Length: 123
Ligand SMILES: [Cu+2]
Image (spheres, rainbow, N blue to C red):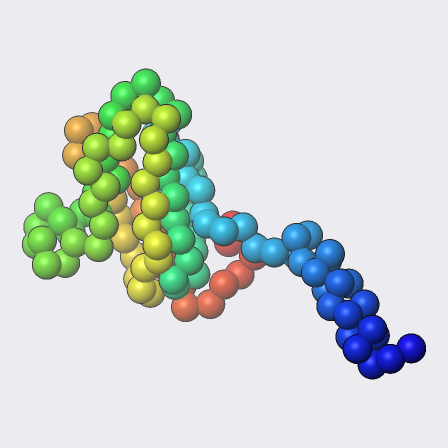
């Protein structure tokens, strides 16, 4: 058996194993019309890892980093209106804590904690 065939077989083995070991492409947060409004309300993600909010409710909402309300220069994310059945994705954030709310319904609030290292137990 030639080296090339062996390498091909090994590559196929890795390829077929990949889908079962791949990480989810983003952390999903589901908007709810009742408390706690964001599920999970507190999410921990690795730095640079995408976060996606999904809106299955019948109402428009926003995903607004609290600092946007105080200092536009410190605003990490502000979705604008997220329509029913719509979503909003942040491609990734730097290490830190990011409390956020819905501008339309300020009772709706949550927090993203971004760590430097990823731990599966934090999902
Ligand atoms: Cu809202």
